[in-house]
Amino acid sequence: MYNIRSVCPTAAALFGIGAFTDAPAMEEVPALTKDGRADRVLLYNPDAVAWWIFEKYRDLFAPALGLDPLVLRMESVMPSVTPVCFASMYSGLMPADHGIRAYVKPVLTVKTLFDALIGAGLKPAICSTGTDSISMIFRERDMDYFIFDTPEEVNAKVEELIRGDRHDLIVAYNGNYDATMHGHGPEAKESLAALRQNAEAYRRLTDTASRAWKGKRWVTGFLPDHGCHEIDGGFGSHGLDMEEDMFVVHLWKGSGQISC
Image (cartoon, rainbow, N blue to C red; front, side):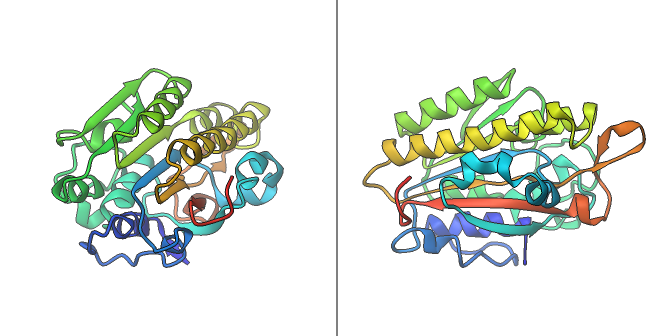
């Protein structure tokens, strides 16, 4: 089983960039292209989608699973809160090493996937919302940031960027499930509707990539940061070292597989 830290070296390897952390790359992901390399990568980050939710409500993931993706059960990091987890995902480091060890959003100063790509002459972009973690902790880099008010605006912009084909890596964040989970509970109808929206968004973005990037080697990933659990009052939470919070589902699709 891999840790979410492995996303960083795996994506770097797809671009031919050598390891700069001790987190292992995931051998299964480069195998999704014909030669283990990618010209374009889209990493879609829906917040708080736990493995137990995926197992229990797999039918809600039907749009994404219709892509016939690689499915991986991934371990998160502690504390299992958003800025800590995404810092680990995109630096390949444990919290003690990248420096974010609580729900705070300072700009990371350690080397990240974005820095590695910029150093290699490649062009990354982040599409996110408001003051969410991905919008904040990877700032102050020579790259493009597209920050919007809603996940719908984010996803529309990501489709535009894919079709424009001016970026090597696009990272997109959707916090809709996390928001409804906190406010209504992990299994509330509002939360389950958000899960389906995430699955549909990943399907739509991957379909767009398969058309716009035809003839190129590409990979897309559906990559949550941490899980969630129900607390008193029927609300949702996360941040603990427990099965529900610490294990997430990751989905990957590549141009070397059967076409979408």
